[in-house]
Image (tube, rainbow, N blue to C red):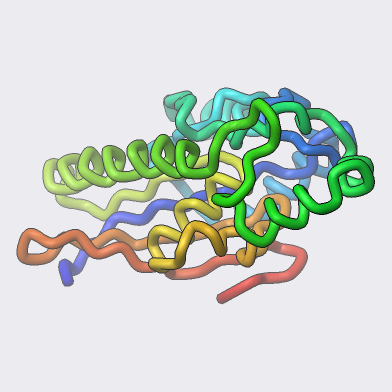
Length: 215
């Protein structure tokens, strides 16, 4: 592997306002605790070379604050939005569980087998996220070669997007994506190597301040 891989840190937003609802494209802001969670999670990171963010305010508000502090530009990417839960959007998860017990169980166990009414199919969600991910890696390989120094990039996004990327890198079936825990302000750090014309992506760490999933 090359000596200087570039690093991509994928981060889920902190706690948003609105409680435990199906929050896909619903555009709630962060709570004060959510802001604090994200600041704590990134406390040990000294810099990033670029920031990419979902345009939803629970991600982009923090991205703009961070970019202003470190004099960085943000690229807002619609591909980094959360999945659209359709008719479940904005509803309490507890209430959906009461009214749609069987469908919700099916969605948690294998999201490819059931799509919430008027929602975004998981396969379509996977395609848009991984299309962006692949294009980002190719773009960063070019930037890495031009700069001749290790690059580090931050993606501010949502739990579903993070699960799609993790499933892809770990070669897990997308039907098992909900087996991965991604709490608020969870960080997944990936190293990307380019050796003999082959790109290799490794998961360096995964977890959150309030309890790492992997480390």
